[in-house]
Every structure is written in C-alpha cells, then in structure tokens.
Amino acid sequence: MQNDLFIHIEDDKLLNDLFQAYFDARRNKRNTINALRFEIHFERNLFELFEEITTFRYEPNPSICFVVNKPVKREIFAADFRDRVVHHLLFNYLSPVYEKLFINDSYSCRKNKGTHYGINRVDHFIRSCSDNYRKDSYILKLDIKSYFMSINRMLLFHKLKKELQNHHGKLNGNLALLMFLLEKVIFNDPTRNCIMKGKKSDWAGLPSGKSLFSAGHLNGLPIGNLTSQLFGNVYLNDFDHYVKGYLGIRYYGRYVDDFVLVHPDKYYLIRCFGMIRDYLKQELMLDLHPDKIYLQHFSKGVKYLGAVILPYRKYIAKRTVGNFYDAIGQQNVIARDHKPDRSEKEAFQRSMNSYLGIMHHYKTHKIRKNMLFENLSAWWWNHVFLTGGCAKFEIKN
Image 1 (cartoon, rainbow, N blue to C red):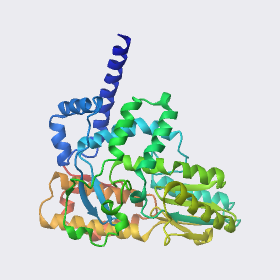
Image 2: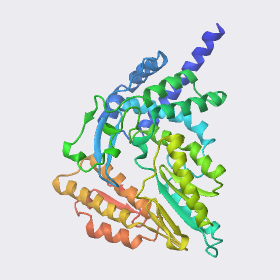
Image 3: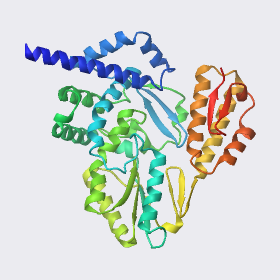
C-alpha cells in the first residue's frame, strides 16, 4: 500500500513537471505548425505523452532538417514539438544537478551566462592577468573542429549515467525514467525518416564535417535541440576542470567549443596547447581546429563571441554588423513582396531585436540609426516602430 502511494505521488510530480516543460517549450514556439497542432488538444496530448513515458514506450518523432546560412552555414534538425517538451523536461531535471558541477566560466545555455557575460569575463581576465595592462600577458584562443558532429554519443551517455547515479539523491525525477529518456534522445538518429525542408542545393558548400548525414556511427548531436546545448556542456565539463585544475589556468572561459586561456607566460601556454590537444583526442575523441589557433600578446586584442576586446575598449565585430545588414535585406524582400502576416511580423521582431540587443552593449547608436533608417524598407515602418532610442522594435496594433 505504501509503495502504491509512493508511485502515485511520483506520477503526480512527473505529470506536473511535464506540464511545466510544455509551457517552457511553447514560450517561443507558439506560432509553429507543430506547436499549434499540439496546443489544440494539449491536455490530451500531454496525458498521452505521460503514459508513453511512464510505460517506457516513448519514441521520438521524425525531425525537420534544413540549412541556415547565418551567422554561419549550419545544418539544423528541428525536433517535433512533442519531443521538444521531452527535451525541456530533461533540461529541467538535469540543469540543477549540473549547475553545481560546471565551472563558472562555461557560458552557453546557462541562465545569465550568455555571450555578453562571456565577453565581459574575458575582458576581466585580460585586465586582471596584466594588472590593468601594466604587465605582459598572453591570450590563447582555440576552437574544436566540428564539435557537435564529433561528440561520441556512447561516451556522453556514460558520462551522464555516472554523474546522475552519483547524485541520485539530488535528482528531482525518477532515475530509471530519466535514463530511459536520455537513452531515447541521445541515441535517436534524426537523419532517419527526417523531413527535408528546402532544396538539395541548400547543402552545397556545407563541409561534410558539419553534417549529421556524414558524422558516422554513434557520432554527432543535432544542432537545434535544447538537450544538445546542455549535452555540449556536459561533454566538456571534465575538460574544463582539467584546464582549471591540472593545468592551473586561472583565467579560462569557454562558450560551447570556443575557449580562451589568458596567462602571463607565453611559453607555458604553448605547452598547454599540446596537453589540451592530447587530452581532447585521447579522452573525448575530439580535434582542435587547425585554422583557429590564436596566440597573441593582450595588446593585439582578441575577437570573441562577436566582439573585439582590446585594452580599455570593446567594440562589435564587423561580421556581426554585416550579418545585421543581411538580415535587414532578407526582411525587406518579404515586405516588398506582400503584406507581412502576424507570424512574419513576429519573426521580423525577433530577428531585428536579437541584433539590436547585441549592439546595444556597445557604442553603436549611430550605426544602428543609419542601418535602420537608411536600409530598412519603408513598408516595414507601417507595421513596426522603435522604442528606447533604436534599442527595440515593437509591433503596431
């Protein structure tokens, strides 16, 4: 009787957590076809999903595959909305455990630790290591080659399994169910039965190392899933501690596969490069990108996460400004072709505000003003307006 009561309480908690995961998943996806289809009968759909999970019958649906060109050319696998709910469920269970295991200076997919935080931290590293630019210090910036396509899924699964078993008492969910869902998500092959969106020519120019279709058996995670972002941090967590602890690099930060080391001894950084290369190869089956190795004195500055960091100043990278120009051009094509519908207006708002949000952190008011008032099609001004001094777009009622 007591066991039945415990199972009932645990099931109630899982159901509540599943509803929360649904609300999290739909926050920015309410206008997609999959989300709208799910939302029409969302309670029934969530109860069906709950039953599939608790009876260990859950299977992921086919993904939608397409290519994006900005900020760089990438292959995206968008999971079905139902599976996005499961991804949020897993994230909500795993994130509190791993937040206590991650170093402070891993910046991706963490609350209040995005690109702007990472840029400011690296700026702080340089100032601290150089005693406010009075002493020599050096910057080593490295990048992992085809990171998401090179992640070994079996190794990732065992890393997660080991940590979750060690922290079983701190989990908010049932360990057996969590491991079942993790296995289904990690070992799901999104290239099977996927729905291809766009033309075959969209893949032209995409290196084979950037595609899941050529990643090899048990290699690669789909870019576009919330879980992939979290798993990317989990996979490199031991490496972060190796750099901070074993190598003794106090000033170290990482955003996904792009990481920076700052140290007063240039030749120690050169030795660290060899040890980092060997660790990544032997322990994680990863390679450093041979064309993205940067070692310079701090006075030369460093380009990191869309910004250029120099002594006493930071400014936005030219590529980010160029991408903003391209985004404006794409939106102009829509406005000139037809009257934008509600979803297109919201897509415009998201795209423009993401760039404005980045640029707002730098002295770019004049650049933003010229870009928008000289390049944005007059048709758009019938539907949107600016607030906060070229800081944010709002949609007219």
